[in-house]
Image (cartoon, rainbow, N blue to C red; front, side, top):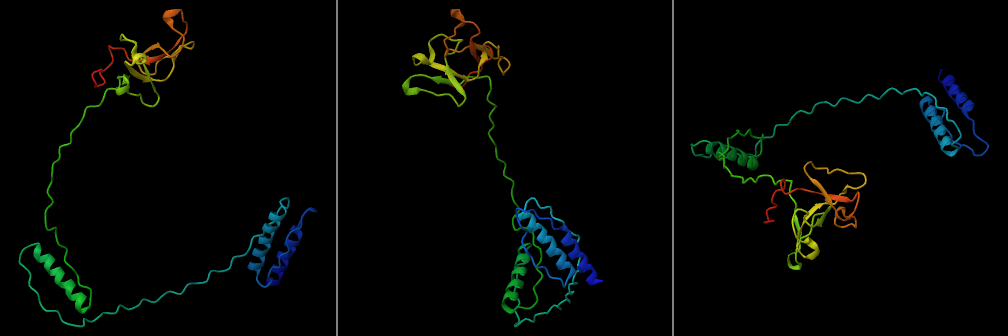
Amino acid sequence: MKAFLLLSLLGAFTLAQTTTSICRCPQVKCPSSNAVELCQCLNSRETMCHKACPMYKPTYMPCPINPPTPWPTPSPTPEVQAEPTCTCEPGFCIQMWPQSCYCGNAQKQRCFEKCGGVQPELQECPPMETPSIVARTVETHPPKPTNVHKPCGGGRGNYRECDHGEVCIKDPYKDGCGPACDQVGICVKDKLCGGFAGFPCEVKGQVCQDDPRDDCDPLNHGYDCGGLCVWPLSLRHDYGEGY
C-alpha cells in the first residue's frame, strides 16, 4: 500500500511538470521513504519552479497527515515542607488596633527570614490612617464670546499681529485710516465673500465688507468686488483690551 502511494505521488508529479522553453525548473531530490515528506517535497518543488518560471502553473497535491506524537503527562511533584532551623523568641505587641495587626505580621516575617520553615500567613490589616477629604475650590471663567475681532496694528512700539489665517484691516465701522497710518485695526478671517459669485459669510450675523487690499471699490464705481466678513457693532463684543 505504501509503495502504491509513493508511485502515485511520483506519477502525478511527473504529469504535472509543464515548463516553458525559456526557463528550467530547479532539480530537487525528494526522499521516497516517507509519503508525507515526499508529498511536501514535491509541493515545495512546484513552488520553486513557479518562482523560477512565472509562466509555469504549479500543481499541488494533498498530502497525508502524520499522527501527532503524544506528549508525556508530567507527574505532580510532592511539595517539600521546609523545617525551621531555629526557634524564634516570643515578642510583644501593643494592644491597640490596627497597630497590633501590623506588629504581629512583622514578627512573623522576621522569624521566617531568620529561621526559615513554612511561609507564614499574614493577617490583612486595615489602613493606619483614614484618608481625609480635602475640598479644593476651582476658579472657573465664563466662555469667551466668539463674535469678537482681535485688535491688530498700531505703532511700532505696540504693534500687534493677527493669528494664522487672519488678516489685519481697518475697521469699516469706525473712522480713521487703520493700520495704514499706524492706527489700530481688526483681525478678520482671510476668506473671500461677495465677488462675482456672491459668496456668503460662513458665520451667521457677519456682514461682507469691501476688502481694502484690492483695487475694486464699490464706492468708486466698482462692481462685484470681493470682501471680508466682519461683525457689525450691534453684534460685536468687546475683545477685552479697551477696543
